[in-house]
Amino acid sequence: MGNFYVVATPIGNLEDITLRALRVLKEVDVIVCEDTRVTKRLLERYEVKDKQLTTYNERQSGSSIPKILAFLNEGKNVALVSDAGTPTVSDPGAFLINKAREAGATIISIPGPNAAIAALSISGLPSSDFLFLGFLPHKKGRETLFKEIAALKRTVVFYESPHRIMKALISLKKFLTSGRKIFVARELTKIYEEGVLGTADELIAYFEKNKEKIRGEFVVLVEPL
Ligand code: SAM
Image 1 (cartoon, rainbow, N blue to C red):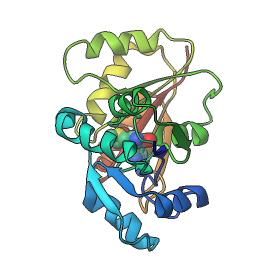
Image 2: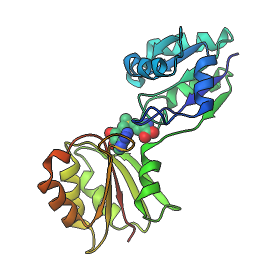
Image 3: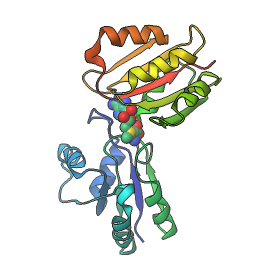
């Protein structure tokens, strides 16, 4: 039975990859990825050549799982990567990992970048006790969730898209007690990386004034009550 490696890859800057991740990607027989075009860019940058790549998408997992389990059964070592960061964190992979474990494969972590932890680490907000919510629901339950976030006594971290970042700040403004800080991390590790700390009012004013900054990838953190 082959090993199943869960390999974290960069969240933007391709230099953010561990030596061990590169060695594992060079040594495994098969790399399971979300989008082969994204993974190929990383492999080309580090001259990882002649790899068998196969895609995995949790929604269409039916056909790819037997194929991946067959590789493991043949004794092939498999690495799972996502487009960015740590696989399975707001990304596909958990179902596949369970299937691989059930089949008898050893699951091995190759830790590395994660956008939530990177944002937390530069936020200056309490970081020993935090709640990670991934992507919030778009409609149903969204406002209730913001209300609940506002009542929490621990730092809350969530992922947000550029289309909804202003809406999220407006909802937070509605529920947060005055003076509560929010940290917005944008485009971490990339050219336009920035971290902005302020109240909901201050952040809304900031993004209204700098509309060109409402693009890219965002992590939002809310100060505890
Ligand atoms: N698995 C990834 C991880 O470990 O962080 C997260 C994947 S999730 C599909 C993608 C979301 O993560 C983006 O929409 C954004 O909210 C956040 N994200 C990913 N890369 C980021 C970056 N460089 N800067 C800020 N947020 C990022």
